[in-house]
Image 1: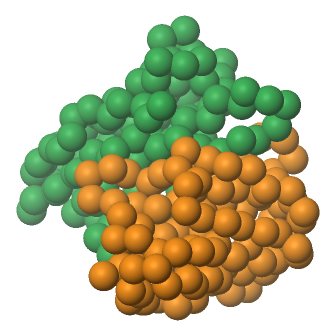
Image 2: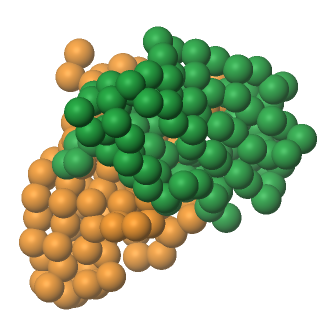
Length: 114
Length: 113
């Protein structure tokens, strides 16, 4: 199993550009989520999904969109990038039947917006 | 609202013990603990469900005080490999199912030989 994969590993965007961060898992996990990590702030939840076709907002959803058309994939879209979105983004998945279990994190995407 | 972790940082000699605390102002369903090394993804350590259970993993254990909404992570006889940043993640479950983890800002642990 590849576990949780994320692409790209690094990305530089200009203000106003759009892009999609890709996340995929091959563990048949129901629950997937996106976090951003900034120095001194810990991990903050952006969006999450409890299954295909179901998504919900986390703590810091503004400026980001998600969709979950399959169990395996959970892309994160930045519609109009801003410097405040410079961060490291982690995707995570876990097996969930109602409560959260161990979360498996992807390797992260380091995004810089200039 | 983010749980509060303490201390923010701690430096130990190899073989010493450490305690990391995590507290929340909200009623918790579960507490998760993760460790992250610089430039890497967080790695799962353990989950504690409400009910005051204590779990252990090798020389790392944790407790969860449901009444105080607090959890503590205990590292016994620390090893160099324990160095990293420790995060607690709290689950509130306002609805019927899982609604995500809220992580603290982390505790930086440095183990010196």
